[in-house]
Image (cartoon, helix red, strand yellow):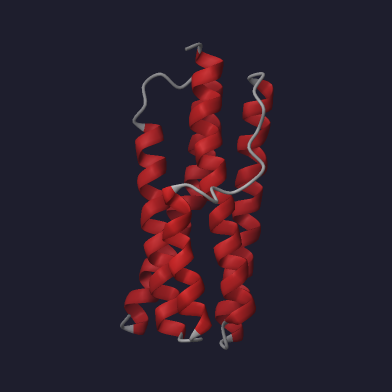
Length: 150
């Protein structure tokens, strides 16, 4: 497997999971009663979309075909599917708890990608930049969850 192909595979996996995250945040923002949380979720979705665009650009510059859809059939999506059930009940604590669980999954995927010694310098730089958004989102949602006693 060439470095470009290797990078494309890793980055596209991260892109698909980030797209699931964007969808989860947008769905939560539309269904939660607390407007401050809705604003926070929408802001996080916009930030994640920016991270997606940067990773897609890195895939394209490596000569790959950037992912542009979520992981509808992959295990990562199942993490965010529970969010739909939580949102249905409009229980703010449950919604935040599910988002935080999805953030844990996303964080683990990024940590695994960053531990991969075979990423090219360009692929690593794009992943590092997206990691800043992921880490900040994870920490924010974890703190929010704990502050709500969820």
